[in-house]
Length: 119
Image: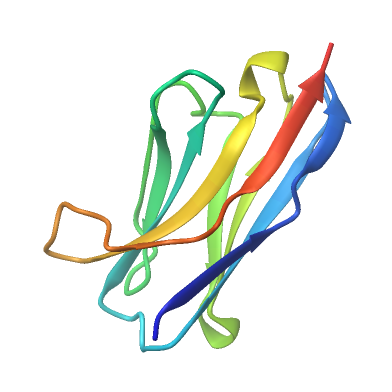
């Protein structure tokens, strides 16, 4: 059974940095893409960034390009989201998700971790 478990959220001040982690288990993820999403209160879920397990290629949403960085540790089955220069509008629940390389839809989701940025 696939499990994605996020951690690292918390309350920070504007301008601070935070690193989220996603522990993936339950299968081999070499042919998967891992993504980070967020959902703010009252808003739709927003795609942030994705990374391919097999070659490390990435794609970023314009809203976080230059501030957020995704990385992976294949040996540990971990995916990270480094978030710098945080803003109050980054406040949201952040989710880790996984999809097969050739699919569009993300099939697996974590439970989410809350990030709150105070001004």
